[in-house]
Amino acid sequence: MRGCGMKRFLALVYGIFCYALFLGTLLYAIGFVGNVGVPKSIDSGSAPAPLTAALMDALLLSLFAIQHSVMARHRFKQQWTRVVSWYLERSTFVLAATLALALVLWQWRPIPRVIWDLRGTASGSLLAILSWTGWGVLLLSTFLINHFELFGLEQVWAYFRQREFHRPPFKTPLFYAWVRHPVYLGFIIAFWSAPVMTAGHLLFAIATTGYILVGISYEERDLIRIYGEAYRDYRRRVPMLFPWRRRAPELPEQADRQAA
Image 1 (spheres, helix red, strand yellow):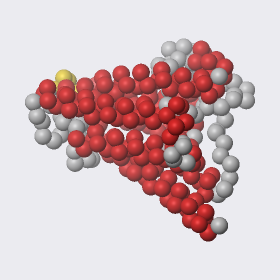
Image 2 (tube, rainbow, N blue to C red):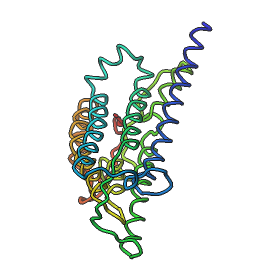
Image 3 (cartoon, rainbow, N blue to C red):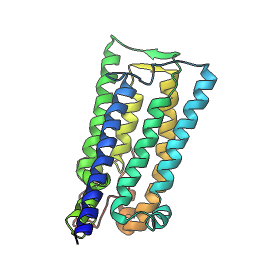
């Protein structure tokens, strides 16, 4: 019994560690993209030949995309949970994604050619505000569904407390009533709203936006598999990223949401 208690405690410590590492890396990434408050940003550091930098950066982003896409898929999770216990699966995914992101931040090579520089103008100030707004939308959106389940803490806490884990109920609060993927929309706003846009930043924005669009198609297949007609109906009524349709009405007692 004591050994089981220690196992649960270690699982909780592991989940907290993975979350803390993720949070620190995310905060660094915000400074990295915005060129503020970090020792190495998207436009700082040694700059090799533009083609060399572009190839290195594309490789880094590809490694992140492959890790994230493969480990997020249902088939991989089915096999992976034979090796890693269910209550550690999400935390392990968060850890792997964090390490992949940290590699991008560490090894990124700038391409300093300026596409636009709007610093000191009203447009530049607006872009800076939009960038912070994007990060705010992203973070708030995770709490609107279930932030702690999304990043693995709820799973390890349930295991530590010896309680059954249940997915949160499906709901469409605030941003989710307007777009299906406000987290991704927050990323896109933050990445593109740059008062100074260099060629390296532009490469980053284009590549990550492309990955988001491809990733959404795979993610929605998993959501349909998990939630069936409830998610199909939600997809019919609510646009994917940009709220160009009328706001969707609330659904009574909606089934379930929140997959990777």
